Image 1 (tube, rainbow, N blue to C red):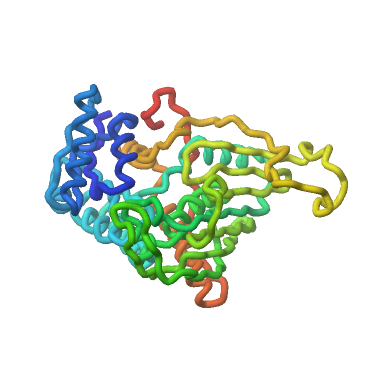
Image 2: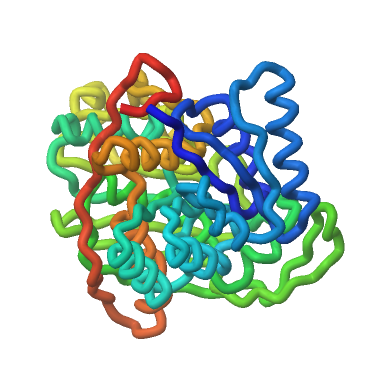
Length: 400
């Protein structure tokens, strides 16, 4: 198969792992150009690939485009990889589609449903592929969890509980201000990982309710190079809500940038069934662990009120069994969804990180604040069908 030719628009913090995986892992894609509003960033990205070529990588040395329109007008480019900031996704994706390019975008698809609806309609009108992150659901961890659920290992799904708890990104991220502007906040930033995994595991969502707040009106950046800068917070930073799925399952989700929490405990994801409980790994990662608890695992549990038992620091997952991962891509494999879309472009099959999923997930993410403002349930208009599970291929970096 001839590799699909890609141009990267936006060479910021997230681009590093994409550059690494497009250069060293995925064999059916070819990064032929890069572009950034800050030319030095584009040069750094291109230099990374040049160094890899000198060390034996069999890839193309990427061009450096002066602006995104030069990339859009390059007849060699088939797919635009949109790695710009969230509030820029809509314009970059729209212009790429108008120029006849397929698009794979970092999450979210857009910052609101008006923008997203327009992009979906435009892609359908022009017959172009449109998809995007997160693709962590395609990794070994969530795929193993999906297989266990689909096999009936925990029975019928009752519900799920998810939490992403931290105190924001301004202590470590080199450019954290956008997390507190339009398109930012913990639900739009981290929520896509959790909600995408939820719909992959539980299927279509039907309605959402929620309550949201902004705890701190300003944030002090302590990371470099903006150490000492104070930024105004324009979005809600503590969001809690419930999702009703078409199956009848109910999931709770909390995302916050307002809470001090141990770094190793900031992610929680549990799925409850009539015959057991499954602990899903951090959906911002590709690997494990996947933990399973079934009724027989509790056979020796003392028959008493747990609240009356003496405890020290609780061990929440005592008695759970770790399930071996059943799929490839347990390491950080960002660009896996892009490679899968490119395989679909060549083969004509469906792809997994498609716009239908992104569109449905975005409606869920944006509905928590709408529900909070309205004080009522928000019924969802988008429809969703789960994409195909992953298949193992003996050649790492080649998709089925």
